[in-house]
Image (cartoon, rainbow, N blue to C red; front, side):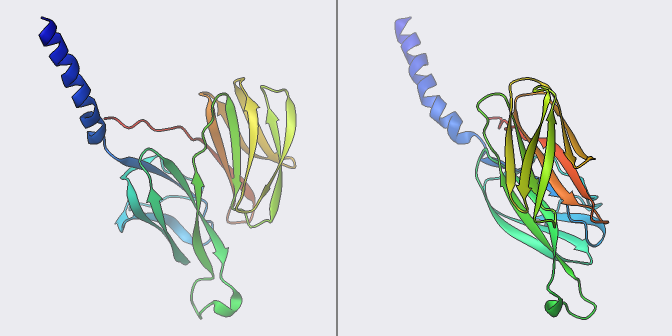
Length: 226
């Protein structure tokens, strides 16, 4: 009986590394559509494959798209806009948020009848939060910086957060659940409901009329099934 027990223990120890090796090497990509210029919906292509032929509307985002770890090519297209693409070295277990937005093409480089805007993709790495709640605000607005008011229900006060273009600002929200409202002056931008502890992201972008808008989402770690 002791010999059998010893065999089972040794066999289990040998199988554990094999199970770890068999676990799929998968990373995740989330894409946010903040590309206001152009017409119609935005197309998302990953390694040349159109992920959703109907396209995404301005202010929409994807869920976490699981992809094999390695080098991936991400491209966004929209009618009337020069396409934008980026190479993404995706690591196993990580989640990268990609924000598609537009920048004007210099007037002396615009071809007759050609697009006046080009699409760009901003990469936003996932941030670990040891405990409690954190707010991360990123801006792809055309404005150089935005002074945002953040009303945190759990803290019972309003805090200021200045976010520069193509940069992030973070705010520790503590450990109390509640609502978080973001405003630009007196204009509401986004409302975040704190549920599970972790990092909550708000993307600030310009709509078709140049008004600043906000899109929020929770950025959890995805669990890879082995």
